[in-house]
Structures are given as structure tokens and as C-alpha cells.
Length: 308
Ligand SMILES: Nc1ncnc2c1ncn2[C@@H]1O[C@H](COP(=O)(O)OS(=O)(=O)O)[C@@H](OP(=O)(O)O)[C@H]1O
Image (cartoon, rainbow, N blue to C red; front, side, top):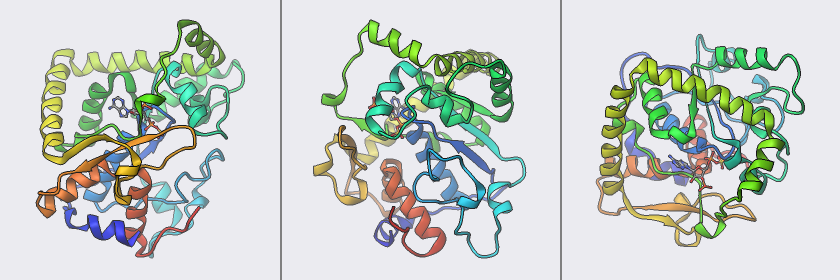
């Protein structure tokens, strides 16, 4: 909205050079909002165009380029959805941890193999086309991040998109309040795994590929860079954050995450004694996704996003 936009506008710093075109497939409860936040920051840096259709492109319907119905003047669907050689990225997490959470979050969610559904392959039963489907997914995606190795995959993302350490700094977006975190018993974990056998299989497949990528990159080099990333992120968090894990009622509208009926989602408060430039950076790092969408929309179209 205009208000969000006005509070955020001082930060923009375009970077010269070619700007990559990126497609990020956002899976559910996989730490994807945290990745999305840094991709939004990168897009702003590059004055990129973002497609919008509400907040979620009609999910759980399939994505269609026609959804991107409001285009900046002078562009057409082809420009926006099909730019040459986009970089495809997604993130997966062990289904044991995402499954129950997804159901709590989205009552409309497909109840079996929700992540397989998210990536667009048959999520009901194993069919003989499954191995080929996975292979073609692997071919389509330049990087499948693995949430359990978040910082390691972030380094791979940084290498792919040519991002600096500062641009990879993050806070955990969409964290649940501790009262809403219930550890699972082993028997429940086994049941979830069996119920979501396709998600589990896909996760295992891409985890192997990730480990292979790590080998190619160089384990020692990766660990060294992860250490640097953690130190830099730590410094940035100290500089930016006045408070972590703040309940919604104590946050101003700008930084209050969207809440669900069953879960409390926590947010962050940014220090007040920052320069305008620093404040622009720090606010963006903690900005919940709805506010960030609204800001990008306003920036692109010069008007507020329609409700709904
Ligand atoms: N970097 C990093 N490390 C560890 N955990 C992280 C990280 N980033 C996000 N999170 C946790 O990811 C959960 C939210 O996932 P999503 O952003 O995919 O959720 S959503 O579907 O978009 O709502 C949510 O998990 P829970 O707090 O367990 O619910 C976030 O706290």
C-alpha cells in the first residue's frame, strides 16, 4: 500500500549489469518465505518486474500466465512470464516437518503429498511415469534448496545469482510461537512419512542431488563460506533488530505478519536509531510477505493492490 511504500522507499539502489530473471516456486512450510524475502530484495535492487495475482496466483489452481492480468505499460505476457532462460529455484524440506504444519495453515491444502502437488506432479499415487517426472523436474530447476541445510543452500543460491553476503542476510520469516510448536512422536513421524510417501521420495531424491552439488562446489570451501555468512548475518541482525520473536499484538501494522486461526506467527521490531538507508534495508529484511507484496505492487503500478 501507499503507506508501506512510503516507509520503505529510501533504500532503492539499482545495480548495474545484467539482471537475472528468476522463477521461484514457493512450497509450503519449507522456509520458503525466508528465501522469497531475499529474492524480493534482489528484485527491487534490479528494478525487476514482478507478476501479481493476489498473493498466491489462485493457488491451489495451476499457475497460468493469463493470471498476470495487470502488466506495466509496454510489456506483454510473454515478456513477463517467459523471459529468456529464467533461473528456476525451489526449496524442499523433510515432509515429516512440513506436513502437519501445512494442514494447520491452509485448510484447503491437498491432504496427501502437498509438496508434490506444489511442484505440479501427480500427488495421488505412484505411477510408472514418476521417475521420469522427477528427472524432468531436476532438469527444469537450476537449484532445489534443502531447508535442513539452509545456510549451505543459501551459499549455492548466492553463487547462482551472484549475491553478496549482505544480500543473503535473513531472519526466519513466519516463525510460530513456541506454544504452537509440538514435537512429534516417532510413531506419528512414521505415519506422516507413509501417508506422504511421494513427498518423502521426492525429498530424498533432491537431497541426494544437493549432496552431489556440495561435493562439486567443494565441501571445505562451502563450510568456509557458511561461516562467513553466519558471521555477517549475525552482525546485520544485531545492527537491525531491537526485538526478536515479537507477538503480533506488539507489532505495528507495517511489520505484523498475517495470522492464521490456529497459529500465532511472530515478527521483528527494527531499531529506531538507524539512518534512513539502514532502516530501508532492515525493514525489508523483516517485512512479512503480504506487506512486501503490497509494496512491490504499489511500486510497479502506482496504486494499492486489490483486496482478496
Ligand atoms: N533459516 C531458517 N532456519 C530455520 N527455520 C526457518 C528458517 N527460515 C524460516 N524458518 C521456519 O520455516 C517455517 C516457515 O516456512 P515457510 O516460510 O515456508 O512457511 S509458509 O508456508 O510460507 O507460511 C517456520 O517454521 P516454524 O517456526 O517451525 O513454524 C519458520 O520459523
